[in-house]
Image 1: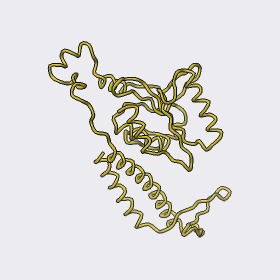
Image 2: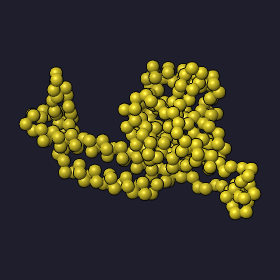
Image 3: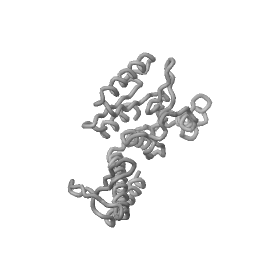
Image 4: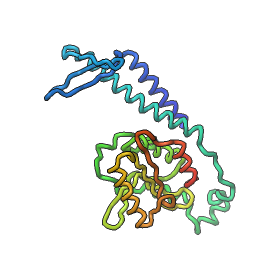
Amino acid sequence: MLAESKRLEKEINKLNSEIKNLPEGKLVCTKNDNSFKWYVSINKQLTYIPKKKRNYAQKLAIRRYYVAQLENLSAELRAVKYYLQHSPKDLYDADSQLLYRPGYRDLLLPYFTPIEDTTSKWMTESYEQNPNHPEQLNIKTTSGKMVRSKSEAFIDMLLYTNKIPFRYECALTLGDTTYYPDYTIMHPKTGEIFYWEHFGMMDDPIYAGKTFSKLHTYSKYGIIPTINLITTYETGDNPLDLDAVQKIIEQYFL
């Protein structure tokens, strides 16, 4: 994680240097019939950019793209630094590691499979993934997966850095319906399966209604919130709380 933090800081510094060499202002594109008009916004004042100044518009477009990238990298860096500040220490005692101690290991292996062997196999097995809207998978996570939102990327990052085995959008058939929970998680100590759903638009009444219906179906098939189903929620005014996510992971899996 220290290496990741340094990489992000390097990328952020590079973007800041690039932005300094570009003109001030934010490019705004508006559609006009079958073409687009360009404007530059400076101090909330819009100024029209004529077509002959295409090079100027291009530089503003590059600036806006770099600024968006900078915001994403800065958010990721904050999350990484948060983890480094709050990462749990190793709490395992010696006897819990007997399967890995010389002498004991040979005696125990015929009867017990190390949970790490089970979780490693589970993590590398192929599984049916969500085929819907692949174009929305546009955020690369710390674990290397592609997800649909920054909040999912933060959950992915904390699961990955806490070494919790998980699958993203793995198919789950309940009756006649197939769901794709955001995360299917194997407990790193017991091998039990948990599910994690993040509901990110709870201020949308239609979305909220579908959420409650989905939770009802989960419960009908024995997947119960707070027992083997973890749920987190978000609205426009109440973004995902990283501290709360870390505490959830510690409560359930560490």
